[in-house]
Image 1: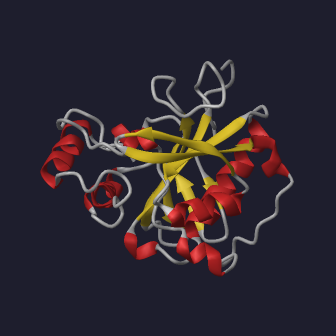
Image 2: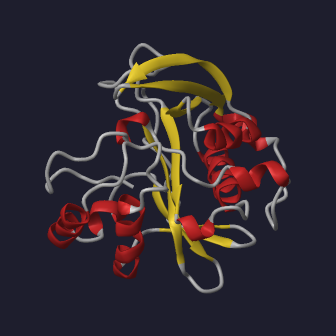
Length: 224
């Protein structure tokens, strides 16, 4: 794909959230996302805490902060770490594409369990997609998640993604969904509070199928 890699914005704000680059104070939250069994229930299970701690000990927060299109979701008032959101590129080396060359934009997120149920994932995703629609050329945006992850599929549907089909990866059935990036220019969501009752069921986590298998060793990125 001959398109800009992803967003250039270093910070995006909403009524309740600040999406920003990661910093050292986020390490505990980043480790929690990788080791919490409920957060990773549809992502291959929790990763060994020792391996994740070692990874960040060796690589530091730059492992996350330097990744294109990666944001920490933080409370706007307190800067408390809530989760992560990535608008990156889906590697051509994995299945699940709408173009022959691959490399499409792909949306993923993870929220700490204590932040589920308040519509924060919807608020963060909507803000990033609107910002991307204003900056980048129109192109497909993908969501890939396990068929069993009904809550995240519900969020994708509310955001306007449409299901294209299923495929097998990491010994599980995955759903591929897509939306046109510039379709988000015309959308208007209420982000000051929970959009409606459906959103409360969707904050558990939506992440690419490529994240479903934990790293083989501490030198492999635990991803966000």
